[in-house]
Image (cartoon, rainbow, N blue to C red; front, side):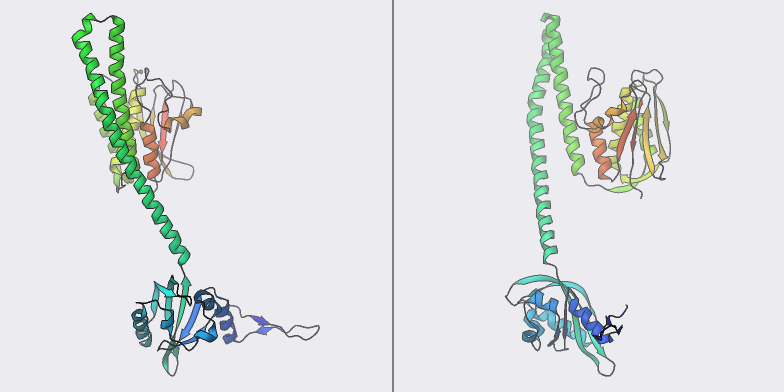
Amino acid sequence: MEALEQSSGVSGSTLRGPLPPEDVLAAIVNSSDDAIIGKTTDGIITTWNPAAERMYGYAAEEIIGQSITVLCPPGRVAEIQEILGKISGGEHVPYHETTRQRKDGSIFPVSVMISPVHDDRLGVIGASSIARDISERYRIQAELRLRTDDLESAYRDLETFSYSVSHDLRAPLRTLGGLSSALLEDCGDSLSDVGVGYAKRIVAAAEQMMQLIDDLLNLARVSRSKIRLQEIDLGAEVARIAEELQHQEPDRHVRFTIEQPVWVTADLTLIRAVLQNLLDNAWKFTSGREDAAIEFGMTLDETGCSRFYLRDNGAGFDTADADKLFKPFVRLHSAAQFPGTGIGLASVRQIVERHGGRTWAVGAPGAGATFYFTLPAK
């Protein structure tokens, strides 16, 4: 550290030279924002800097000569005596947090570090402590805890409300769908074509509403579930889901191209939901193609970071509308063309963002779509 310099008052000239080390040290102590206090091994205060005066409320002349226990709240005196015992033995007391008491009796939190003061001839002759008022940090932490508790309480209330509403909605929907199906089965012959059409539309609407309730609950679970990271081969997961889709519709012929292995660190349940939603969409939107093709793989962007993609040659969409795809309930195709609730891609974005990644898509009407997502490096 460059020594402080001093100047003379001689007219027309300035003499510069380093201050004595003890003056430099005194200047550092006096200008510090931390309370720096010197004391004997018995705990008698010997030095007291301006920051200590501001922090504790005592002037130097009224505190020097008193025991350091004056600054201890009730119940903390034994702590000071233990520290003084360690200091007498030459030990350093590392940074720790405790409480201290001001002149006006108020108690506040501090961070303290205490070191023994050595003399070459006499050994340990005292102690030096550096203390910082951390009241503001504690206030912020308490406020954050309160907000976190409020947020968790709100989440619990929302979950309770969601499950309650879903239960209350399901019962009449089941009744509505069941009675409409019974009407078609038992009285279909006596209904006009228009009446049969109405009954079928009621059944379809009830089923769609049930699916929407399930999707909303799944979306809520995604936002609350705890992430458990593990090594996952995305390619192997895509292959399993593709096999399931093919098994469900064996008459469809879709050409899958799947890169394996593609290793990532992620939550298996959540990332499988991402792949399931993306593959379900690709399967659905290629249903009108005889040469349907779905491809999964990984590429590197211009910075060398991995990005994963799922590409299909299905119905596609206008890239200008890409951001709409990831919003709940937003659909770029009618339900008559392609059924769905518009929740799946919202879940995809939420899961990927919870992992610290991002999602985007590109496409063209009638020329397929490609969905991209990233996951942070291991």
